[in-house]
Length: 457
Image: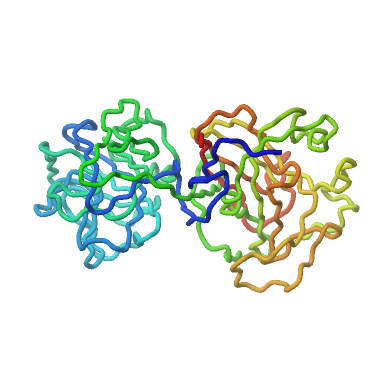
């Protein structure tokens, strides 16, 4: 067996195919961001439009703690005159300047923390001005104010038009629309990729392709590539990310604590998506027709390319998942090749292209569901010793079953896949023939979408 000479980026850089530790990022990402140091910024000119009327700004932001007293993040905005449009902070009292020259004052129902990734959306139009944080509307002001557009300056990222204190932090996936997006649209796809030809999308800086001095506009028109202005080069940096979904049509971030408790006295099995992401690697392996993996349909004979990863499934519910003795039946099938029992219908793996086109389907054969290890950081009650093993299968509250990446069939066969961006889809306890394998208190945390890239080293 050997690992291939191209890189797998699970939304952060991987050197020699070994994944470094990194901060998990709740949000859709293409793997990179641009870091601003307070002296550099980007000027997109007037390529996107000449005179905006209705519009929407969307972006991921990670402001550093070392911010100046006042700053603009992006827009066509002159702070000293309170004119123009865009997004920025006045740090005293967490006041936010946003849209049509007027600030949103007072306490918001959500905040933008330092040193963490947050998604921000602002809309302006017939519905007035609205501010969204992570897809949820947190402020709204009805009515329109007079909107000024400075034609002598373009759309800037990282600074106001007045060249006051610049932004210190990271930006990613900036989208600019020439229409006011509805609240339902923002809630639906703030954390999802959008088509470069989406109606009303006039500029999209994904921060994934650049030269030393520009960031590419990835819309079909590509009229608004942003050029460096300032003394220092704009570094592309990596960022970690992981997303979860309540179903296949609407992707939302993996939110909440692993110590979430349900009111129903039932098990609740979920997926440790961070672990799956951080253990990803690509392997080239040769199979004989007599190998168990071939006989079980996990791979074809010959040389194959495999995407491998750990799957940890913690029980965060209020009751143990009890499956019992596999010899008694109840969803278990004995496999003569591996000489152990498989529990049917436990998990699905799929590979999607970045536009959500199904590319490959894999499967996981859970031959033994057991208390493999305690959940790290668990604060609820749990048994001190494991209750379940291969002879009496299940997962106790506060414990998790783990299938490490090097086990047989713990992969998706990606032979022939081209370089690019993809989503790993992991689903636990899926619906098969109209039913699930076991009852849980919550099924909305059974599906996760994990973005990654395959690139040349």
